[in-house]
Picture (cartoon, rainbow, N blue to C red):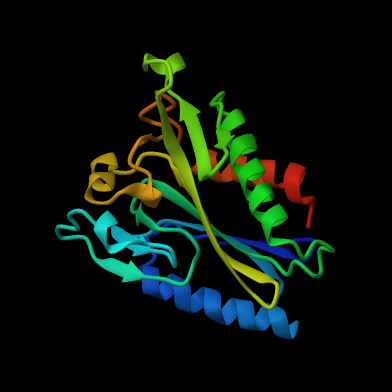
Length: 221
């Protein structure tokens, strides 16, 4: 399903998309955006179970892949898991068109997008210095002081100022799959999901929230 909006296309795919297929589609779309033959795109989807290794991934952080395939990819970051129950948002924007050719500012905006989305479900997502992604303090959920879990990951790539890859928000994935890796290279903290925190939202509700929160951060285009 495609939803054009002021030059920005929103695409929602309801069945899991193989990771390699999604990367190929992003590569083609990025080329078209650069050439001016296609609009910018936000693509919301899920993947079949897969571990992906970003450009900073360390071999020792792959603990036990089991029957899950491992894919080396060109996005930034380290190891993460993708699978059903996790909403992936691939964001293909031309930062030059947006008068903000600043990768750090773009990542900051992606963080704000996730934080604002979670806030719509009364979940307080937070940034942490030195740790990419969005984190949740476990104390309001019965955790000990100082305990926190990651609820969303960010890994991006830019080609001639056109972005691709993006964010992964844990709605209700198999959290035990994260035990096969050191997620994002961080051993001191865990991983959680919206359902694990007691917020039993549907994918459709999350998609609507992502769309709503987008406007407040990136505008209506």
